[in-house]
Image 1 (tube, rainbow, N blue to C red):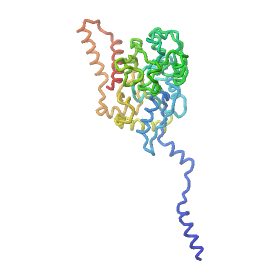
Image 2: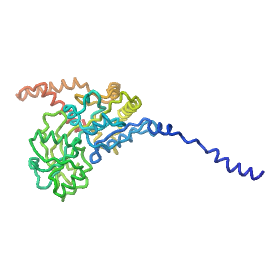
Image 3: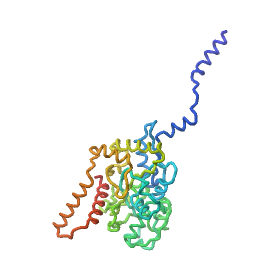
Image 4: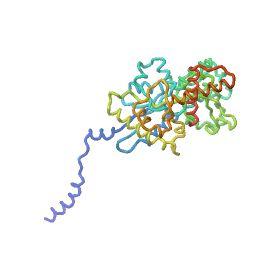
Length: 370
């Protein structure tokens, strides 16, 4: 009798803690609940850091989660948004989107893909050997432009065409290209990335590598580029304090896949947008990437349709995001240009010219945190 009592005492706690393990279906449902897969443009730039900031903002430990996926470039990201199972949203360069649309690479792309918001501007970096002093010196020399599906390759093609500059393009990864630049196998390395780009963090002043200016006139006819500069504060080892490097910036956009036939994923993205927009100002706090200070959630992306949930949120909360009526602002800008032209005796600008200048102004304003 005593033995039976001892056995009962020993076994009872074990019996009380036995819990049936969750089924595979239960585990799968829990892990996938609220997941949004966000594709970045690569690890050498800042998009991975931006995705990490968003992941921390969105993740509530139970119902919402962002899973960053490292992509292979803007054009590949567009392809993945269209066709790759699981990719819900992606960071893409504005000029790459317009290139894909203009070249009709993906039929009906402007009807299927939508934008959630314009993001920050990324700067065009042109790092060269010591003997290169200006962009014209690169004529007929080897310049790495990243993979053929990268946004950098598209930006280089646009800018070099405008400059009538012929180079021999190479398509190594940026890390491989940097090693080749140091060894003298190539003369230049082009990279579109938000400053300061991690790729250039370990370059020392005594290596002789340096950035060269890229004339803004090379992209003056585009609405996706804006003038900007690389400063010593961005790259102390590469830019002298009193000699900032003039260059070009290109906008980035957060795009959404066409999920109308996938209700669960569509709801996940809608919930992501609600939290992202509602908590957006917390991304301005220290610890997050400073590029968030450039983002204006209400900024338009001409030629593209905004994601429905984002458009609805902006309509409901216009007073909180300070969204000015874009038509009214555009009309005021047009009147300002006309007045200044008359005052200076200049010829009137056409509506097309004013529209292009207005879009350049808004891109510039984004690059200056306005």
